[in-house]
Amino acid sequence: MMENNRNSFTGSIGFILAAAGSAVGLGNIWRFPYLAARDGGGLFLFVYLILAVTFGFTLLTTEIAIGRKTKQSPLTAYGYLKKEWKCVGVISCLVPMMILPYYCVIGGWVIKYFIVFLTGSGIQSTSEGYFSSFITGESDPFIMMILFLLITVMIVVLGVKNGIEKFSELIMPLLVVLIMIISVYSLTLSYKDENGVLRTGLQGLKVLCVPDFSNITFSVLAKTVMDAMGQLFYSLSIAMGIMITYGSYMKDTTALEKSVTKIEIFDTAIAFLAGVMIIPSVYVFMGYEGMEASGPELMFVSLPMVFKQMGRWGGLVGGLFFAMVLFAAVTSSVSILEAIVSSLMDRYGMSRNKAAIVEGAMALIIGTVVCLGYNRLYFEFELPNGASGQILDIMDYISNNILMPIGSMCTCILAGWVLKPGMFVDEITKNGEVFKRKNLYIVMLKFIAPIMLMIIFIKAVGIIR
Image (cartoon, rainbow, N blue to C red; front, side):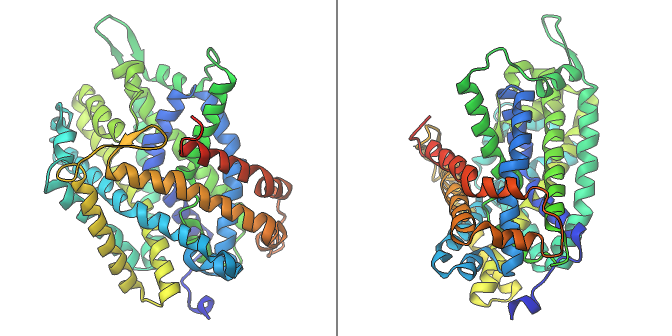
């Protein structure tokens, strides 16, 4: 039935680049460097790497295996495996539907800064209050959001082979080249502050890579582990329905474990390079205080100020940086939209064009509300985890801190206890491959991952701080 007519990637390279493109998004660029700097540099990297090859590997492998086995989208895949569990598919589809609108709003911010630096007027983006005046405007953020959404919809409408795969094969190498150029340049920087203290890029690299054990305690280590686990959701596109979708497009002859390993390596390398690109440059010009910024504040306030202090090269470096960020944002938004479009096609029999237009219209309406959340609909709300925010922050909190952990916990229970790990091991080894991490996978799936996910959830809802 569906399997015979379903789109698929032409080979393992297309799948790996598309999956890696989904994984390499804004979370890697504006969240990973901040967490690494805050949580002891090399200590965070060490913990993150261990979790990536255990916790992250288990969830990523399971989702891709679900997709390839069922040849279904996230909305229908769980019900295909076990009818009583189709509600998990609803959660997996709700997550990207909530994320896409506000992701397009942030993508619009990236387009704005890319245009500003491209036209040679990047210096104005460093003026005090520029970012605030931009996002509180009533036309610019809306226009940029529409432009980003249109780019995303157009790529998805072209399909898996002609849209997602070709775009990934073109953009991902460019993204890697850009991030490597900026990373190398970042290490060459030096600056003497008003007190005559010289700070260099290599010193900033030390902040990122060398573990800081001076204040290490059990609570500090526990916090680092929790931050690293949370980052893995952003970094590997776990619990968003994306990897189930891409897994459903994966050919049966593709070696699943090898593909997952390559995605892990690619994503971790990009996350590390994002740290090399950002932390040394921020440290050189702003010191330790500058590295306290994260999220939009880091990307749209702190970094433009850094580019300004680079002198004549600042405009060029800023332009390259926001080009790279735009590439990363689009590859991620395309995968988010594809998870929804695939679900609408499988569940309601829609054509690709109709599904993309329907979801695009929904994202436009909700994205408009998100934009208005910074002006006419502005309010502040205290979230259960103690943070405060408005519409975008509430949507981000619900999707990332509640729905994603719940969805992943249910996936582990279904795969580990209801259907049993053997079903997924058989899918992973269906071509006669040796499953090198089989024992690790089974233990993580049945015992460790569900417990870790439960801890993430109860921390997110404020039961523990």
